[in-house]
Structure formats: C-alpha cells, structure tokens
Length: 228
Image (cartoon, rainbow, N blue to C red):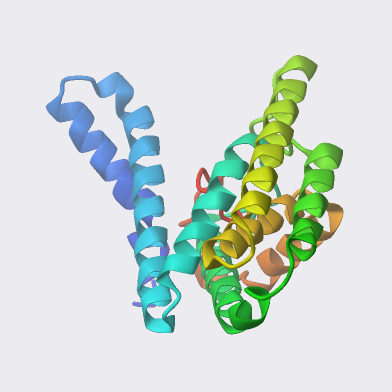
C-alpha cells in the first residue's frame, strides 16, 4: 500500500453492492443480494449522470435543450441500442462532453436554424431513418438478442417511431427550438448505430482510459441513451 486513495474503494459499484447486501439482509432475502446490488448500481449511476448533466446545463444556460436531447436519445436507445463506452466512468465523462456540447451548439445556432425551412429539417430526420433501418438494433455484447424475430420487432418499432417523430416535427415546423432539440437527439442516437459512431465512441473510450479508474468500474449497458 502506498497510502493513496483509489477510485476503486469509493466506486458506485462498491457502494451499490453494500446497499444491496444491507437491503437483502433487512428484508430477509439474502439470495437476492446480487439482484438488488445491480438495481442499486443502475439507479446510482443514472442519478449521478442526471445530476451532473443538470448542473452542467444550468451553468451553460442550456437546461431545456439538453433535457430534450437526452430524453429523445434515451427513448430511441431503448429500442435501437448503439455504441457505448465499456465502463461507467468513461460513459459518464463522454455523456457530459457530448450532451452538453450538443446543447451548447444548438443554443448558439438556434437563431439561424429557427428561420430555416422544413425541408432542411428533413435532412437529419431522413438520415436518422436510414441509419435506424440500416443498422438497428445494436444490442450490447453481453446482452445479445435472443433471435431474429426479436431483432426485426425492435427494428420495426424503431422505424415506426422515427416516422411518427419525423411527421410530428415537420408539422410543428422549424420555428420552435424543441423541434431542433428532438431532431438533434434522434440524429445523435441514430449516429451511434453506424460504423462511424462506433469508431467515435471507441476513440473516446480509449482516450478516457486512466489507470487510476481501473478496477472499480462495472461493465454493463446504459439504459438512458448515453453513449455507453
């Protein structure tokens, strides 16, 4: 021991494991400790990400935009899956960088976008539809789809949802900021399905690899649409 504190000792996974064990003992269901720990792990990780995204968006003045982008991306990710980082802490940092970055970009460009025609709005929406039709779904490696029937069902639902959203946004028009925020969230999530999206997230995953984070991280797929 060199006397230094490690991230491993204070990781969310360690805390979640302790909480799961405590709850299982209190409830007399010791056999459920692993399941409870996993649930607590997912909850803690989601809460931390939500709090940090909220703080960051408030500081940048992009709260509404970031909320809509994240909600849209999360909703589609439940159906489509997509590229993701391999461990939570890299997922957290990459999510903050990407979603806060997208929110800031849309905030700066919204005065221009709000004056564009609906035909321009169709460009990212049609691209998203193609990407979803071409590559969705992309399940995590540790949770492959059971069969071809499940894969086709998820693809059909994702395509149908994309068509409905596209029609709704086109009808709503480009004069509303949230229309562009939804389009941005859909475009980003759809992009994570593509080979280019996988390359980008793999690069971020490698870039955010630090030795002092190893060991305390838990590998599993995000449930909120973040690039994990």
